[in-house]
Length: 249
Length: 77
Image (cartoon, rainbow over all chains, first blue to last red; front, side, top):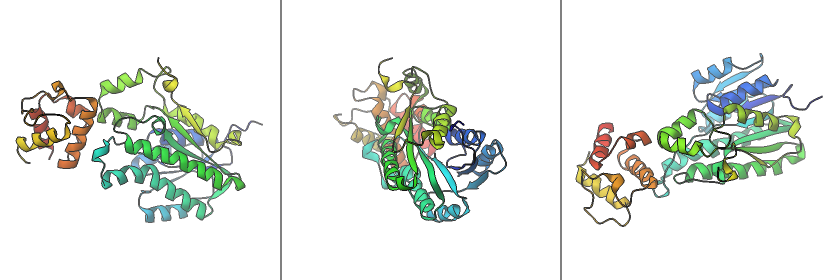
């Protein structure tokens, strides 16, 4: 019997209204899991929901950056065998202009909300034994870029946080890992292209031996981490970059 | 919005090692010695911080002179 499936598991996917989160939710449901999806945009979240396989999926619109909303959301979430934390934003800002407002804009979504969600889920015993937690990091956590102080730091913080989950919950077989992806073709890619320029983005993508990533490429790695096939893997980060970090190409 | 002289003063303040009054409204900012992609990011953040106007890379690409930039900011306030 192959362990590469998600049958009989219930998986929470945050940030499921678009991009990697959306594709992951669909892929996870196709692998047999019941999926609980959350996101801020009700219409787009519903669009993801309509694409899920199976009849036991749940959608919950919520803004995790508001703690009261988060607490009431956690009450509605069933027992979980896995979580894919996929909410995130990108906002380039040079160091000398970083203000308290910009700082919290990025960290609230990319780090604080995910940390608070996990605390509340653990505290209310919603995470089953042998569950698997996955965070969406970025190669920027270890290979930052100019203007990326906040984005890169928030992802680096997430990677270290994930390792502490791995340590604190190993006694109940709960694992925690990250996926550090390079550029993936999502609405966030379009935003980054818009924030910079199309020319610069095209130049960047030329350095990928296997080309730019697709949300399904990330989904397949997430499925592996959520499945029992990765039973012995915890506190790690899987890099998915189409060969970008290998060197000159 | 304040006049273009003030706008230019703010830009000059952000550029290291530039003589005051080097920049004129008709200056092509990409031809300045201090210009770099980092300066582009700094311009965007400066305008975001000072005027609460969000420019994107393409807004910047369509500007040639400092006056072009000033006009774009002014139109978005």
